[in-house]
Length: 335
Image (cartoon, rainbow, N blue to C red):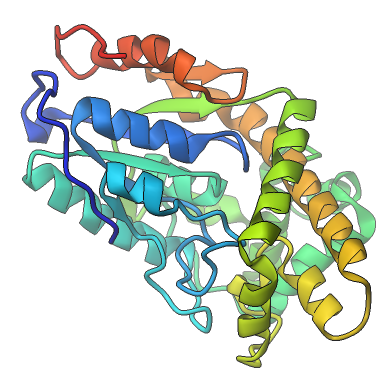
C-alpha cells in the first residue's frame, strides 16, 4: 500500500455503511490516476487499483503505476502487491478489492476504484458468475484466434455455436468474444449458462468514465511511453527478462515489455522497439474505447458521468458537483 496524509478540510459525508464506492474508469492514458487522487483529496478517500497489470510489483514503470508524487497525495491500495510470476484472475482481484473496500468503509474512508480492466470493473459492479477456471492454454488460443481472424469473424463462429451469447456481444468487442469462446471451448457450455447464477453480487457505485477523443488519447499514450523510456523502462524490462518467466504469464503481457525484450535479445533496434510498443499501446487504447463505449450504459447507469475528454483539473468542479449529490453532502465543491 502507498499512503499519504489526508486533508483536514473534508465535506460532511454520509455514514460509511450507506456510502457507495466511486469508480473511475476509462482507457489507458486518459488521466484516471490523476482524477482518482483529486477525488481522494476532495472526499477523504483512498484509491484501489483495478488495472490487471499494475498489481505486479516488478512492473512499476511499464504499467504507469502512480508514482511518488501521487502516492503522497492519497493512500493507494492493490498496487504492486503480487510478483510477476503469479497470476491474478478476475475472481482473485475481486476478493482482494472487496476486502480493501470493506476495510476502508469500516474506517469511514471513501473507496475509489480506478482502472481500465473492463472485466475487473464488471465483476465488481455486476457480480461474478461461477465459471470454472479456464486452462491457460485455452485462454491463449482464444486470444490468438481473435488476433488471427479478427473479432467480426470470431463473432460469426461464436454465433454458430452459441447464438444467445453472441447476440449480447458487439462484433468488435475482442475481450468479451475471446472470453465467451474460451468458456465454450473449455467447458462445452455457453457462458450464459453460468451467468444465470451469480456467486458474488455486485456493489453500488458512482462511476466517472473518461472517454477522450481517439487522437488525443493516442498522442497521450505516445508521450507517456516516451516518458517511461526516460524513467528507465528498458532497465525494468531487462530485470524481468532476467527472471526467465514463461511468456504465458499475465505480467508478460504488459504493453511494451515484449518489444523491449526483443530489443534486448538483439532482434530489433531500440527505436523500432519503441515504435512498435507505442503502436501496441494505441491499439490497446482503441480496443478499450470500443469496450467502454459499448458498456457505458451498464457501467455508469443513472449514477454515472461520462467525460468526453482527457482529464484535467479544470474538470474538477463539474465532477465534484456531480458526486456530491450522491454522497449526501451539502458542502460546496472545493477547487
